[in-house]
Length: 421
Length: 165
Image 1 (cartoon, rainbow over the protein chains, first blue to last red):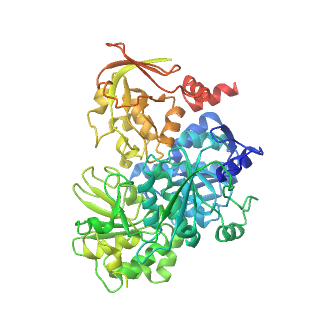
Image 2: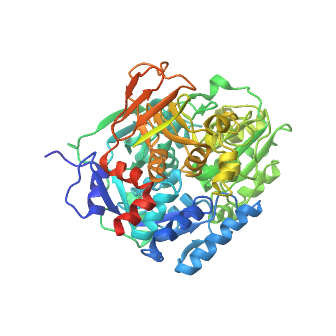
């Protein structure tokens, strides 16, 4: 019998069986379920058709993040509905406006992303939880409704594509450049239904924050989830969380049946995804000089402290180009507070940027930085589909926080290596 | 289970942001969502789908966001089934969960013979798409039995309720 893949190990544990096979459809027990104010109300409505009782309120996490604080009466009403659900069922893991941030960041900060845990979220970027060896699976509202009632979900055990990344990153090249390069290599349909499992020297050297960026973009290849193989950094995270579940070694066996790809990033340049698909990845140097209207720094992909820090280093002593606005949305209240304390926010504001409340907002064209007809944005977020950040004739280029900041200073797409000392 | 409708042809990589932009995710009222379906990308879509439609699309249909609103918008516009070369996984689950059949077509080359506007019939259980006028048949993968049961029940919630009875 061949060895097991990481995802087989986790799903086996969640079905209470010694071994599940790839391709099998199984009922798995969920450790945590995440809902937000956009997909949550529909999940709650469907849940109420089938049950009056949440399977385990301590395992449900409700976060407000997409439009925070709400900019329309409709969104405010959706939040109100979620608050009454939270109250009725005694859900203590509720992150009110001003006390949380973007769901995937909150899950990480609050120690839910424990290795070996199965996290289901009514949001496609739930795969971010894989940074620390958890299995995060994005679903729609009806799936979430059934999990609310039963604590279980049907899953097809996915194939695994092992992504081995080798080499040390050069100056001005970041986890985002690696992640975009992987999406470019695999393609937006290249890993559909599969698990991406990340390993290799480059990944080992990454901080947990950088791994969150890597895991986050897994879904842009069509993958069901992305898992970074666990090591001392993720195990230390698990120990700190106080939520250890007993499967700390999340990695495939050497003889497991899986596909592999290898990448050497030693000579990788900063890269950028051109409109209108995430896998349309080119070196920044090839598109330098395109005029921009907006630079956006934020999102579950790149709105963390290290992202804001690298941007502030580029902005220090400089001014944002007059034709550009820089919109910064910290990923969480904790990130915001820390960026305030360390002076990062001040650097951004002094350079001419504006800092919003922690929210998804601009990333999906919902609020706080939407684009008008014909406008061009460079964004640290995760999608550049037609109309993603606003008008259907706007354009979004996806890049690292450093490229976003450098482009904001120059007023056009800029290779950040020229501005990093 | 047989479904009849006019074919609406779509290309590869149709994402959920173009099916229903985020600015409308402030409700899950089916009528409101249907009113704005494909608003930026294919504004005539709703009018075309209103009499009953079968979408025939290329690769990776429904990529992107987990918004189930996309399936609600399509269904309420008159879409009865989706046939595509491949589906993005969250969309696929959402479609099945809301009782909208989603079948993978096995057509090696292009889908040119499936003309926009042609009247077609989809035999969901057997995975056969037939063009009414010409009688041409196209085969699709049969849906796994478990998913077929969800479709027959009219979606996951109904399936769940029927199992409990």
